[in-house]
Length: 68
Image 1 (cartoon, rainbow, N blue to C red):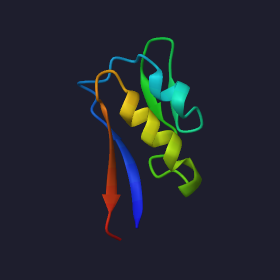
Image 2: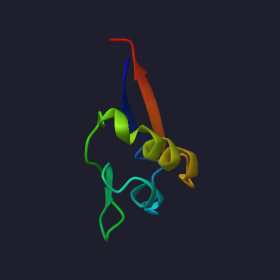
Image 3: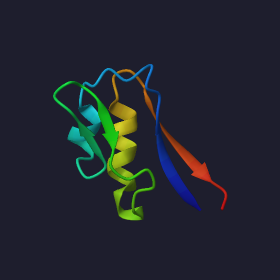
Image 4: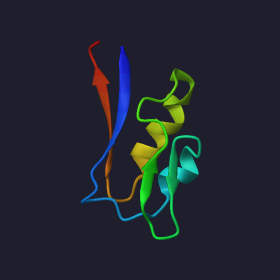
C-alpha cells in the first residue's frame, strides 16, 4: 500500500513544525509558504511524516493511504 502527503493550504500558516519534524519531506520559505518536497515519500520517512502531521499546530497536513 502506498501513501502520500496532502496539505490544506487554507489551514497552513507556515509555522515550520513539519520541516522541523521531517526536513527531507517539507520546506517552509521565509515567507511561510510550505513546499512538500516529495508528495509520495520513501517508506523510511513515514515515522517523521507521521510526527509532522501529529504536531502541525493548524492540522493542515494529512496522510492519504492509496489502495494501489
